Length: 451
Ligand code: CAO
Image (cartoon, rainbow, N blue to C red; front, side, top):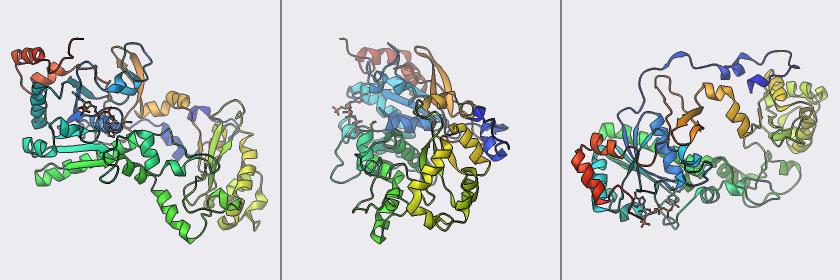
């Protein structure tokens, strides 16, 4: 972003805004890893569970991922871009983990998993409802094996009519209320590209695990942590449940449909790009929009900076005009106001608008494409976007730890190959001898059956 500063800007963007390009100061991140000593038995697959354990791994937990021999996490081969290599779907969700292959349905495999349960602090899983029980790992059994163990699960729904259902991302977005409130009023419900059902619930689960670890310090006991994807999505969509209740008391005046004179129904409608808060906003075209699908900017007409906005867009008379001077007067005219602002933004690139507005503290956000994000140096500097090297696929980009801890080292490591650490975990973590490992291999508990 910062490289594309406009030549038309007279004052430099304020120091506050420039801060995003500064590298972490020396001294940060030098005092060990936050979750050093925590061992996670990672029995996750696809996205929601792996998001959680990867984050804990970034924070220093030792994550041992159990995978089915010969197959592994299904995402290893989904959306493959490089023949024969683990997909980006897998590699970007399974960094900082060790991989052990175990057939959980094999008697010897069960025995190894039981030993892992005793050696670990947390078991994280996101199997379909009942799967872990069918493997023989009920909560009662796990708790008996290791009373300190925390069992953390992602499920699609919490207890209730749908608790037995399998759930994927978009199902959660729909069942959690997000889809019915996303999109344009005249169009169908829309899912969002941000994985609020999977990654969002993984984040919730990580918080639950850390809280349970903290409580275990006092009680000495593990507990179950459950995050339902429907609940996670609803938590992220809570402003829409707020609006649902406001509807009883009259129209939602900050929605553009209010200004357009369109009446509200019984449920919160889709609101296009309206701002969800009290400060109206909209996405506006910028220079080049005809050919560049991302030449847009989100523009917020924040009340305290209304006067600078009027000056910037060449409408100084709006500062005192009764139809525009105060926020309530502007609400019924939002469409026309944003059309006028857009006539100005269309004469500038999104980065020029960003620079000019930030000189006056006007909150705006360029629509950044994934290409621009991948190339953004400041995100590399902060470790939010990281390049890692993989022995089969070569270099790839991943999203590093978005949570920055001042006294904690965060290393982002590549994802493991299938079963890369099987021997290491069996011998170094579980104490099996070389002969034991040979016997285990011969038993078929950690190797794929012959085809
Ligand atoms: N060894 C042997 N068997 C194994 C194994 C191992 N190491 N790991 C998994 N399996 C088996 C399971 O035991 C299960 O077998 P059974 O059906 O015989 O019990 C089987 O693999 C499939 O597990 P699953 O039911 O969890 O997987 P699925 O592909 O049928 O469903 C999903 C996938 C995601 C829909 C389901 O796991 C689910 O609803 N999870 C909870 C919600 C969730 O996390 N969704 C997010 C997914 S990301 O978009």
